[in-house]
Amino acid sequence: MTNSKPKYQLTDKDFKQINRRSLFGFQLGWNYERMQNSGYLYTILPQLRKIYGDDSPELKEMMKTHMQFFNTSNFFNTIVTGIDLAVEENEGIEGKDTVTSLKVGLMGPFAAIGDSIFASLVPTIFGALAASMAAQGNPIGVVIWVIASLLICVFRWKQLHFAYDKGVSLVTDMRDSLNALTDSATVLGVFMVGALVATMVNIKFAWVPQIGKVTMNVQNNLDMIIPKLLPAAVVAFVYWLLGKKGMTSTKAILIVLVLCVILGGIGVIAKI
Amino acid sequence: MVWWQILLLTIYAGLEILDELQIYSSLNTPVGAGLIAGIIMGDLQTGLIIGASMQLMVLGVGTFGGASKIDATTGTVLATAFSTSVRGMSPQTAISSIAVPVAAIMVELDVLARFANTYFAHRIDHLIDQDKINYSAVERNVLYGAIPWSLSRAVPVFIALAFGRGLVQTIANALNGDLMWLGTGLTVAGATLPAVGFAILLRYLPVKKHIAYLILGFTITTLFSVIFSNIQALGAGVAAANKSFTATFNGLPMLAIAMIGLALAILHYKSIPINKAAAKNVVASSDNASSKIDDNKGEITDDEL
Image (tube, rainbow over all chains, first blue to last red; front, top):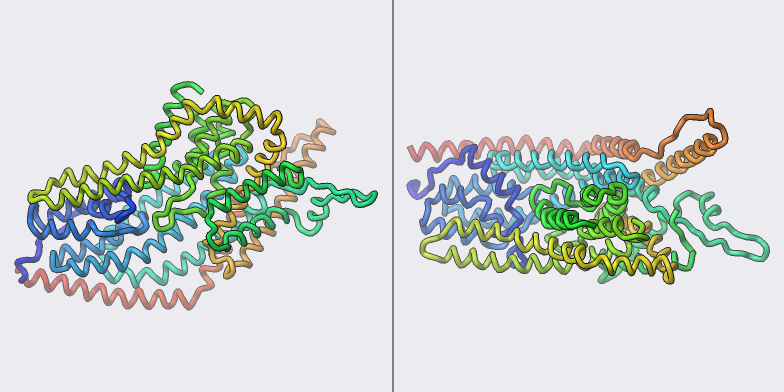
């Protein structure tokens, strides 16, 4: 029995190669049918060849296995890879079912965590900072974001070995501390959105209706209630709009575009 | 616009999508595109203003589950190029008349690129089915995926820059002439679009749970921004009236506001004692679990010996 198990142990060189391929090749083959399948195979193909040996039936079998549907966050994919390789290295082809269920079971949760942190929170916080500086003609905010992105790449580089060492236990391990961290990061995200609404939506009421002999300055009256009420109202309106059935973000953007052209064109609202 | 500017912008458009798929250096984002297109066009200010607005518009639009998203980066590149090279096209007008429509249309080309890559995935299937697998061909067919991705951005940008200038000039003339009201409306729309981005983002964030922080962020910032801008206006007024008044006042620094938000986030993190205790327990128990796995590993090597 033990003879059929592979004897190859991954080296530091292997980890470097996987990380290089993950950072620069993982998503290039993204396609509608099976999404990141070919990318996943690409990142670990050299190691699979070492584990199973070229032209062996096991290698062919595992290559086919890894060409099945796969899609997760490209910021967390090597965690799945690390756990996968820890299993394959020990059990070889006998670990095929474990590997398949590991991949299917982990890709969903890590896609969710990855999307909420790296596709939503990080771009919100650094994007907001970069944009509010850029709006004043200052490129420093973009530089800060680039530095942060490079630090995230270091994190992506480190996690493979970490996941490989910890194996399957890693998943339960990370869940709770990640939840607390994500929840706190959303506090910063929500706070920043509030701050951005107050500073980055530069519109006001230009409408000055005449009621009898009294001219009413709508914007001035609103400012006495609270400044920036119009931007807050627009955000609330779009938020409500997005809750409608069949509404997409692109549709919402086009609707607001048309409404603003009309209201701006007839002079109800104006740019500050 | 001269030929080398068109060439550089086309190369950037082809590379930025690869950057987004690979290391995500953030130079692929709209505000990064504004910076680079601004440098190429020799007008950093315009690039940054357009990039900033487009960045805010798509703040909440991530690529969730591999769905195509509105391509604000390409929109920014074209809007910056035309705003700096066409007379009478202000950044605000360029945002709503060029950047947004381009970004919306580009979604279709993103879909096309993702479809094209299905072909390469099938070629890999075919290669694996051979008796003798050509491993380097398998790897090549993964990397070929970069070509549809890159072309899906570079080709439309090149065509628009090389042949679109006359059309954009005609539009700009109309917006400053007969269609003045439309030009004004588009400017207002350009200023409003960030609001859409914020609303989209709030849909993805747990707003109901953290509503207090949303109110705090809005209120603190709105009060400070009024104070800061009024002091700036006052300073400018006094300086104009009296030449011996030399102090200058800056606008509200956003980084300071972000620091307040960071402090609140830290306080929130520290106020989750139950979760943290649970996490510690899990860590402790998983340490046991991992040591068990280590034991298993040990057994296997023993068997092999």
